[in-house]
Length: 100
Image (spheres, rainbow, N blue to C red):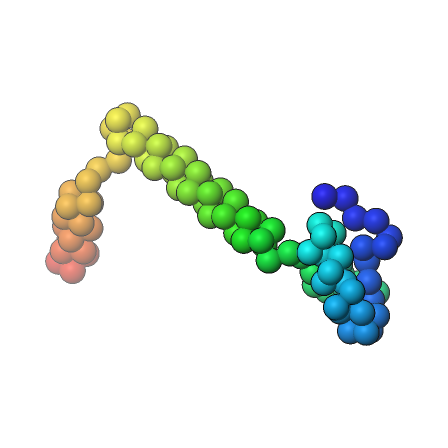
């Protein structure tokens, strides 16, 4: 969503007009509240915030699926070993260092 100049509100003004701003946000607007001339917080509808959170969770799940797929490709190509084999190799190296 693109923001207009009317959607950027100084914090001092937002304090005085919070109810009006909330009504505008509920009607579909999003507001950026500034502090000392810099973006500070956003005022958005609670349902839209929930939607953003669902999108974020879905994105995380897709990233995890990509990592799982890459891991399975590594296993299929024989470029990894199972955890037990790796632990045994670490124990052997430690034992050799202790003896040496």
